[in-house]
Amino acid sequence: MTYEEILRSKGGYQNRLGKMPYGMLTRKQVGGKFRDVLVIDGQWSAITAFREGLQTDSEVNRQLVAKQQLHYELKDDGQGVFELELEPGTYQTLEQVLDANPAKVAQPGFVDGIVMGLLSMMEQMHDQKVYHLCFSPRNVLVRKGDDMPMLLLHASSFAEMRNLMRVFEGMEDYIAPEVKADGPLTAQSDIYSLGQLIVWLFQHGDMPFEYKRVAAKATRENASSRYASATKMLNQLNGFRNKKRSFYTLLAACVVALVCVGLYFELTPKAQDIEFVEAVPKGPQEDYLDDDFDPELDLLSGDSTVTDTLTEEERFSIDVYMRKAAEIYRRQFAEKAEGILSKVYNNESMNSTEKAFMAKSSAMSEELVKLQNELAEQSGISDALADSIASEVVARIIAEKERNMSLGLGGE
Image (cartoon, rainbow, N blue to C red; front, side, top):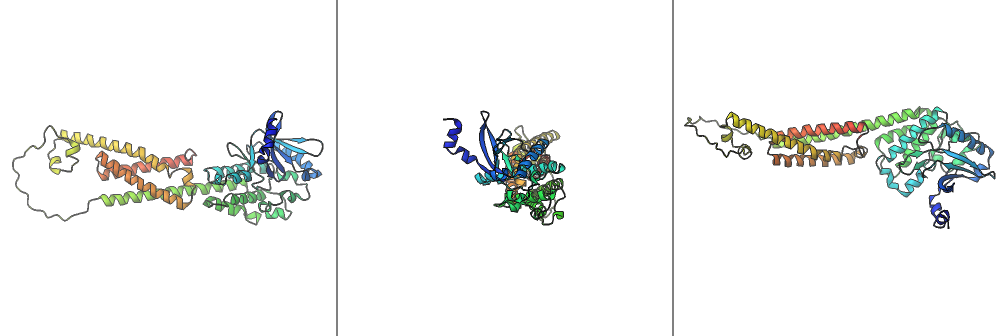
């Protein structure tokens, strides 16, 4: 039994079948290797205008060099059976991918990759007057391995068919109103369809702010009220994302600042009324220092009778000691604060809902305050100095993470 027969006997091919508007996506052995193949539905290949459209699309396919364009070879067996042998790789429809793993929508970067990739592809298509028409999850492919969205056949190649809408039966929600009314295919009709795909992607979860705004405008009934181009839609989506990220960053910084201010007032000694009396005449001065003087035990104990009698050399030694203690505190706090702040300042957290972000920010602030108190006690520095150093370190780390995320270097 051949490998192909084994697969067939175990249902391997059946499990890989993916229904697309133009036919069935399956996997076949071609030249000793297995390739993904789209078998064109016989009801379409029997139509002369459709077969001519396949030839047109084959030429368009060679001209589109975007990485989201899936290239193929058109095969005709001479008996009315047409197949598209796809370029090497493993592909599934977006519908198949999310049916098998609905939680993939929540995976960091998945939705962004789909939407940004399709918008990028649309820019090149529309420049060449090529229109996809229907961005149904059944008409968008995803490449296994990197989740790259891929497009195959474009509806504008079949514009000569008298009833093109029959091909997309059951997918009418993804067709722009003006197209269903026999209007021409335009960039705005593709933008409408992509907006409906965004709505579908978030059908089982909360849609982030930036996608709500973009999808709402993209799916307006009046074509002239939608985005004028895929480029403008992409630019506004990026703009909304940057504004949300800046807002969350500012919000987190305010939370940290409020915690630090509250901690400062909590630790600042309260003023007390002191009654002043005439000092007792000074007697002979006695030297309380001896060779066993330990700045960590004596100075940090808060005994002013010790600090008032220090020599310049002893004060210098203590000053050096305190600077070293502060440096150790700064290094230890920065190292551990980095890990705490990374839980909030990453792409996944910034793209979450406001409620989830605030919960993480609150937990982060509590953890930072606890760390500050523990390290201050270990190093022996004052609470005021510890608070000053912690505020400076937190501000620096936040600024670095915000800069890295804006450059696309940070996040998970």
